[in-house]
Image (tube, rainbow, N blue to C red):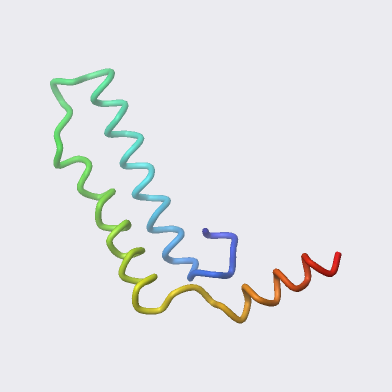
Amino acid sequence: MFVSDYLPKWLGVLLGFGGLFFVAGMFLIILAPGYASPLFLLPTIAPMLVLALWLLMRGVDSQHWLQRTAAAAAV
């Protein structure tokens, strides 16, 4: 998502951080269940909500989408 031009780069970075928190939370559940907490997974929910709101309100850059698919079809 960060590399594509369909969505803003800050959204890709935010989702990347959310993914890191998810992976860390899963490692804690497996390796140290005493320290794991459901609150640790909250930073993974916020980027998903932001992505859902972005897609509902703004969507993807359809002009760029059409240009890329036209270029791929021409090849």
